[in-house]
Amino acid sequence: MESKGSIVKVSGPAVVAGGMVGSRMYNRVIVGASGLLGEVIRLEGDRATIQVYEDTTGLSLGEDVIDAGEPLLVELGPGLLTSVFDGVQRPLDAIRQELGDFIGRGIVVPALSRTRQWPFVPTVKAGTSVSGGDVIGAIAETPRIEHQVLVPPGTSGKVIEIREGSFRVTETVAVLDNGTTLTLIQKWPVRTPRPFRERLSSTVPFLTGQRIFDFLFPLAAGGTAIVPGGFGTGKTVVEQTLAKYAQADIIVYVGCGERGNEMTEVLADFPELTDPVSGRPLMERTVLVVNTSNMPVAAREASIYTGITIAEYYRDMGYRVALMADSTSRWAEALREISSRLEEMPGEEGYPTYLATRLANFYERGGRVACLGGSDRQGSITVVSAISPPGGDFSEPVTQCSMRVAGTLWALDSDLAHRRHFPAIDWKRSYSLYLTSLEDYYRRSVAPDWSELRREMMALLQQEEELQEVVQLVGIDALQDPQRIALELSRIIRDDFLRQHAFSEVDAACPLEKQYWMLKVIFAYQSLCQDLLKKGRPVEEILNLPVREELGRMKEIPVTGFVDRAKKLMARMDKEREREVE
Image (cartoon, rainbow, N blue to C red):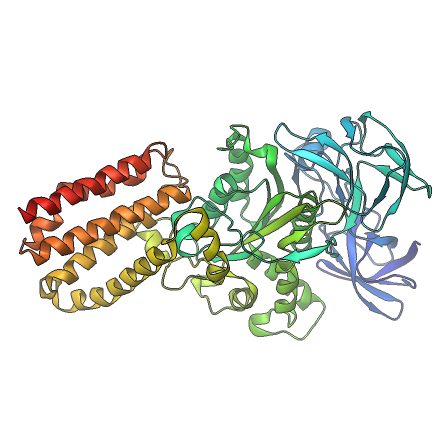
């Protein structure tokens, strides 16, 4: 039911309207003669405080404010993939074609095309009883992704009519015995999580193709990871690399408050990228939600919820969805600005006191679940969130609040970035809480000694930190020979294993089997060095064995045939060891 009031106060993106009796929290409203989109965020008496998702310049007191009687909704249906939306799901491509390169205020364009027809193939027959989450048909949304047409949550009945053919998203494809009509489109409030049948444990990894993530700090499918780092440490490159190579069916990329030139690069690059699995354009499984830093600040707050709602929709179809949020710091800054306009009590560094609660609510919408419906579909949303702490200070509130609820921390280090070591992940500060739950998977699917190798590698990196302190004080000549070998092995791990070239055709992504055998070869070389040292071989000669150079070239060897190459290299090490015995 609509209610109508008028503007009594304007403070930046916050507008106060009087006479709003009957309005409800988070209802969608139309503000002023320009028809600006807003949302009710506070009610006091007959006054409603509204955050406006567009520029409020030119609003005047007394202009009408109309409550639409429903919350802020997103449209869910075929056509989401390959699309580029702003923070409130306005389709930027459609606006550009219709109105030019600039978005005018108050522009209303449907998120999904009302003219395009989709070939609908029913999967149920008349007389079938259905309920929320059941699949009634399928659409080939892209050559790779089959769009499952679902019964909306909360709807049930017996199908009395179902049609096959090409339909627009608003046309009826099925009718239930209670009179409910089903179309290809659903509308869902962005702040309400979509329901599921059961939350499942995180026992399957979210494979990224990046060795430092998959081997040292793994992320579970349905888990959450945060990537904090200062300017220039490679947050956006990490997220774009994951979007291309991670094992996900659907990518939802949310650019929240980032610089315009950075988002332009994303918009220019993504259509040119090729999915390495299917060979098809990457955009065929991608949805972009774009909100640059010069767009209205309140729309940043909505963009995160728009993205996670779209991700939940594809999760309900049984797909593995990856949500890339870049960055939640800009989203938190929007919360801070709106909170200050509302004159709320500030928390640490001016952020609202409910910052931690809002972040936790967002991250909790990820997860691996058993979907609604009669089938055994399982879907997941894996959230990877970039954070931009000012000055790279991880003690600031957004990073700290995120660390309390995220399962994995991939901490970016500016010193590594300056040394051109990418991904610039600081292995001393990073961690993963999913190691124990994923151990069985790695043991069964890759190798029984996967966890042992990881522990050995971490111990070696820790030993290097201790030895580097000695080297800086008295020089490398003060180290004993076994310590020099340990220092060289840790350098091999850093430079030849953990370092990866995002633009290399071979090394940009590395499967688990190759990761495992690379590390097996490195530790076989360590064993060889220790044996030769015991037999009196000079350490300089040991460290200059021809096999050392081949270790540095391993990551550029193609996956096909890599295991055989690795075994031959280990066999050569055994021969070198036997030659010493003679």
